[in-house]
Length: 326
Length: 165
Ligand code: SF4
Image (cartoon, rainbow over all chains, first blue to last red; front, side, top):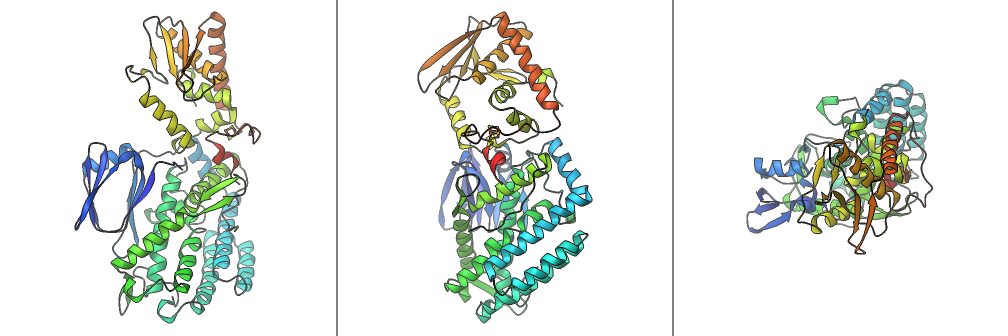
């Protein structure tokens, strides 16, 4: 990833304007910030953001994507630059792999396994030994995507139950609920998953892969970037589940970080700032990479993952989805 | 895939550096967008020799041609490589095709303040043609060429792609 260009996270309501070759971020009650456009890799807008045509054309020219997270914390969508890195030959290779029943299923299986492996790793190795063994068995016998998703769902439910035993009452998930999240624990998970999805989308767009051709999720499912859904699977536990457990253990999450009523919950302004800050710092954490012989940031792992899949499609090297190795 | 007219300086450079790199590049693997070393290369371009406008020859881009028809190329490395020379040769060939008798290439290395001249001889012209044929051969290969050795890959902006497991 480029050393100079960075991801910008907008955490309070603002307007982005353009002045020559720089972006000006205007906020109420705060000074304007000038950012040279070459300093920006992409933007994650976590709060209400206005921008206009002049800004979009500048962003487009510099291949900068803007990811928008909705008020309720869901991933709302992205302004993607029209210029992608996709290459015909690579996309064809990807489509061939996705359509080949054997090859496609093999990738989907390994994604589900790696995802469960990572969930177990961050939640509780011992208590999830059995559910993980069950999952591995059903992954082996699954013959289509729906069965794999089912197996993953079953495993996930056990994992959330175990999670609840480690969370204080008010943060417990009581099962996963989305759109809207029913309680604060779910609001947290949804929000972090939304950010992870946005980061993976950026990573995929840097490779020649097509973001809509998937292996586990249905291709072009609901107009979404299904491949991004596939690749996010392995990283969601690394960010969402892991940070929820950690922040709870350290008493960093407080009631005022959430707004809630009887049947739904969301992060409050203060909560959103805290969570975004934490997630952002987490993406910058580095680990020693075993085959590259250098330290890589979590953020970069997403990109390396997309590259590994590219290589699999293009050159037939085995694809081993990301497993937390540290 | 690509024809002789599409072969540009980058293709020639990659051909000499690593055939696998060329093969991948032709399939859209372009990690140079991301590499800090390449960004540095671009910065050198922007700041040195600003008086001269680059000349665009379709697939080939060169830094400038002087009044005596020498092609000038600015390099961000410190040492000359066969790839640099091949690229220069390729530009001379391109110019020849559009009716300009290029004398040869002058490679500039601002970091060491050195320049190197490579005249465009008939042998160089033959080699330029052979290089283009080589690029096309790599382009149509159905499988990727092997990786170089790990040490030979040092500094290559494709390392992340080639060596991540
Ligand atoms: S990393 Fe090595 S094998 Fe890959 S393109 Fe570069 S030099 Fe060639």
